[in-house]
Length: 488
Image (cartoon, rainbow, N blue to C red; front, side):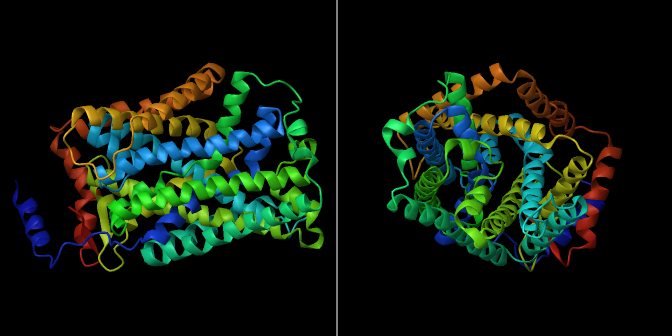
């Protein structure tokens, strides 16, 4: 070790105390993180896709209920992993612990490179489009206005997450309540319609009248649409180290949140179908907005504003959790160590947050140049499902690898087995029906292989490379040592 390194080490040893992420997420905030990340734009848009592929109202409702059941199976597996491997970072941390560095790095690489920034860009643009819709009721909101508003929203929430974990979680709490109130309005209006006798479309004879008989492939696509609306059920696992009493609150939050979301989603769809014919729903590009225009009259602007508030909370949740993924990756040595630094006063991972927002701005730039965002979302969805399956397969392997390891929660083996069977069917059908999209998703993930071997596995790099890395990691830490501490 050279003298410079020793001096830097000595200064770090002189720090008065070890600074860590604070445990500020209680049971309520844990529930709102899960609910807030699941309920985004999906429930306001996905019903159209589910109905289109299922072919009938009755089967669509079955898909929604079973979709929640599948998410519940996955979340039970993640509850076991979360208390057995109590690290922040979710899938990445578990897969790294179970399968080693390469597989974990590939999940991290694909998430940081495309999955989270693309999803964040889409949610932010959805937010700006919906909040501007009442201002421009007869036309599409101006291009520059949507871009400026979405970027302002993301930058503001980035500042909030840099400033205080407590403030970020309070915003999540408030906007999660707002989301549930928006869906509650839809449910109440729908129930009023049912009590008035407007439920012909929900009777078994009519509900299971198929406009066309769906194939197995079409039913699988319906599940994919519903699964998109349920995505985010694993996000609490990204912030495990900030949860108060995680062995108790992590599983409790999961077991409260997933059934609640499934119940709300099912009632919301019943409300849609009680007030709109299948033809009306299929012809709508924004189901909740059409619902509001039909039943709320002069108060119909409540719906687009509610959707906008829903996506606002989703942006906050994505920033909060994705920054912890970058933080965990840097702490494991898979990303530059600069990203493992936290602010000594706010105890927030500011460098990781800035990387997340910069990746968002990059994809925002891509969408502004008319690159097809929906193609990026398809790649993201495939990578997302692949990550879920690899992680839950890791649970089974870890049971075999370390049978004597203490597990505060131990799910029945049928739970991961059933989830993996469903996952394999969805993944297999996706590869068969969309080989190009899935192929691109795999290529994006596999580009991380050479990066891993050159950047992480290759330990005997030339000195000039280490010097270059030091300029971007050690030196910024030295210059800002009064404000940032490195988390060891």
